[in-house]
Length: 258
Length: 314
Image 1: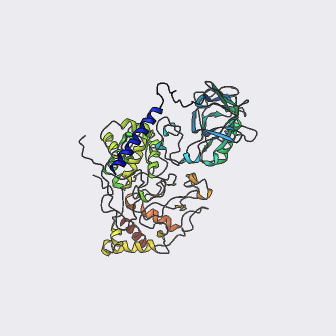
Image 2: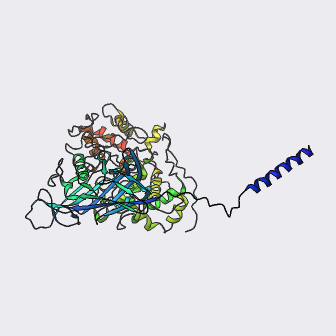
Image 3: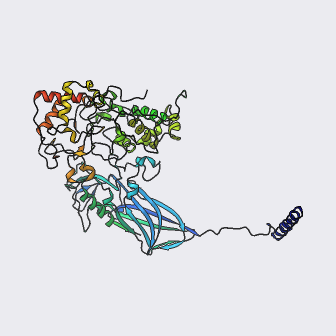
């Protein structure tokens, strides 16, 4: 028994030396490098415009009914933002928040190189996130309550907050007094949008692909499908779902991408 | 601050007949969490200008309700509805008179942000208080993190869950102590539960409310849409959550808008059958009572007042 143990030990030692001898010198071994996939950047910018020019808050404009109007607040959410190419999709963000009161707002992602037809998203907050407890979202999160978009008296977020003042009298020079406040929300208002720039989105190594989403804010009041007369349609705050849906539709139709 | 609080479980004494209390797993009741919640509940700095606390509209001596028809917020702004009592909230399936919010934790955010109430930002309020004692220590003890919106909403909800009502003379009567209620109160109870008066159709169970939403024909045209604001169903217009009747003698004025000042007015309203409204509950058929019976009904409602403090926290 003792002899057998000695023999086994000898075999193991020999094997160990043999294995050790077979090992190459680490100094000459090429470092194992995980190949890094080439990446580029995609930058999405949302630009609010009025008749093709940058929209300025509190500036008096004329809408399609020749009403004197201004815009005092414009915020919106995009949910389930993803790149799309045929049937292939790549998720980018669960939800993005855009406070457009002071002009364009951008979001960037670093991604593997590739070619995509464009982006798909929903205008609004996806249902699962819409009904979660907002206290759990810290500072900087799109769904943080400090953004002032959460309906505290009912669960859920205002998908679009579009507020300002108007005067139906085009000749008046008085200050704009009448206010409008259009706040679509709730699952029924969540609307799919497709952001497909001509030529698609090319993510090239070390390069930035720009996707510019232009919102024609003047067209929020009218589209081929729905006109909003502020004189009678100036409040949608959880109630007035038809008006809320009309605004959502007009916002989606106002979008152009380049 | 002297470290006297330990984070041991806070045991809520439940009255006989109370269902088990369900507490969310992410917000256990501990001495630290409810102590923190109570301190925050009474802190006026949760409002934008430091003038309004939760307790400003929910007085402990009024079963945590208000004496005003509609409470006053910052700068004297008049709130939308009458402040309800805050008892037995652990068993409520939804919050606010229209049931718009599903959890007690989420409910905490609303009055802080409401421009007619505290007009503040829960995150800003929490961050202002976070380094101050006892908040800093209690927050760490209770939730293992700095005071923020999440901690603030959980702590106040935890405190509110401890506000249990169920120690009235009516409860003692129900437990077999027949002398706990006078003959007049017993007569009122019999009427209350009778098929003719039938208050018990909605005001039943441990909380003396089934927490359903009912239009009681208070108006022919409601300026407040009630439950419809949440459900968007026209059939819910003018419907509000059935309130508890516990401590009802302390919680005047009554109804969603505080339009009725006395219990006698309330009894008279239900006796009349209410105003015609397409959504009025079919349970409201009206009834006839003598003055003596009316007095008995009101006496019974007085027997629903707790005989001990609702707030058991020192």
